Structures are given as C-alpha cells and as structure tokens.
Image 1 (cartoon, rainbow, N blue to C red):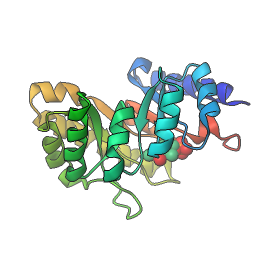
Image 2 (cartoon, helix red, strand yellow):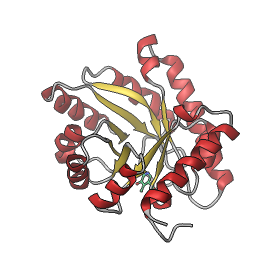
Image 3 (cartoon, rainbow, N blue to C red):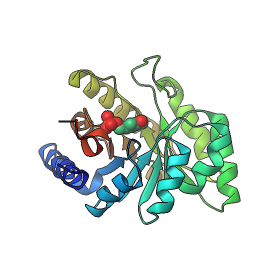
Image 4 (cartoon, protein in one colour):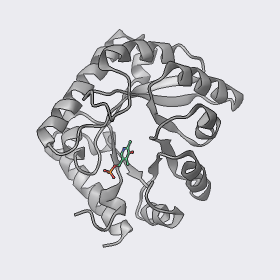
Length: 229
Ligand SMILES: *Cc1c(COP(=O)(O)O)cnc(C)c1O
C-alpha cells in the first residue's frame, strides 16, 4: 500500500471513529505528520487529499511548505529561539509552545510579518521527564500571558500521551480536555471563542483522543511508514 492509499485509509478510519463517538468529522482535522519523508512523500498524501501537514524541524518545514504552498503547514517540534523567525514565516499553527520567552519572541516576529500567529500550548499532562510542555497547573497562566500578546492568538492545547497503554492514553487526553474547558471558561468571550482546538492523538492512540474530544489528530507513521500495520 502506498502513501496515498494509507492516507485515505486513515482519513476513513478517523471519519468512522468520529461517527462512533458522536463527533462531527468536520470538527476533527487530520494533520499528516510528514517529518520522516521527503517532499515527494508529502506530495503523495497531498494528491490523496491531505491539506494539513506537520513538521518538527524548521528546515524541513521551510522546504516542504515552499514545495506545497497550498497546504497548511504546522510546526509540532521543539522551538529554538534562533529558529522562531523561520517557523513564524511558514507555520499556520504552532503546536508546541510552552515557554513565555518564546511566546514574546513569536509575537515580535509575527508583528514584523504583519501576521497574527496561531499557537497551541503544549502541556505535559503525563508528567514524564522525557516529554516537553508546561505543567498542567501552570497552563492557565501561560495561556493568559499568550492571549495578552498582540500578535499571538491562543487557539488551544496540545499534548502527547505515554505510549503503550490505550487506557493510560485515554486518561491523559481526558485530563487535557478537562483542562482545556477549565481554561476556556476563564478567558474573555473573544479569547474563549478562539480557544477551540485540542491537538491530541498520534498513529497509535488517535482513537482514544477523538473519544476524548481532540480536534486535531497528528498522524505520521500510519500514513508514511510502510512497516506500520
Ligand atoms: C512524530 C510526531 C507525531 C506523529 O507520530 P506517529 O506516531 O508517527 O503518528 C505527532 N506529534 C508529534 C509532536 C510528533 O513529533
């Protein structure tokens, strides 16, 4: 099975899961995480209908976004200060913001490009040392700081669940969704309206994420890796 077929299979599975869990399929975006393939791989998924892609390295983001400018490109990787300018120039949505100093720099770079940058706050729900993100009890404060910056728009929260156990993943996503609702209720009406995204779920656990309320599932291997069942 090639990339196009694999993309279509995942899109169908996601749509079916939405129906199963009482979710509107139009409210769940499938982000094709193309970080392991070259431009041609991304193009194959694009040909099958993929319109939103995720990259975790600035150089790959630039290369692929320039090759496929009609798609929406998202940055999902570790943010380094010196690459923020490049990220802001190419990303419609940044999923992985968790430091206030980066928020200020993103806002400055966005101002220079006359753009408002959409961002998600990455939360380390599981508390694993290997994972990035702000602690759940510090997330509200960071969202408020982000929302107060003129060229940033806080769009929601993102997390990565521990791997291996679907029940653990589900609990992690439920916690993220509860935190999202909590923070949203503390924002102004205008800020709350924009704060409508939950980025959760990857190849092995997107079904649990959709059940928990995710609005963006980030799927890499299930689309781009032949070895993935
Ligand atoms: C690589 C990556 C994904 C995709 O993971 P798969 O298991 O390949 O689906 C999703 N989110 C982030 C942040 C990633 O780095």
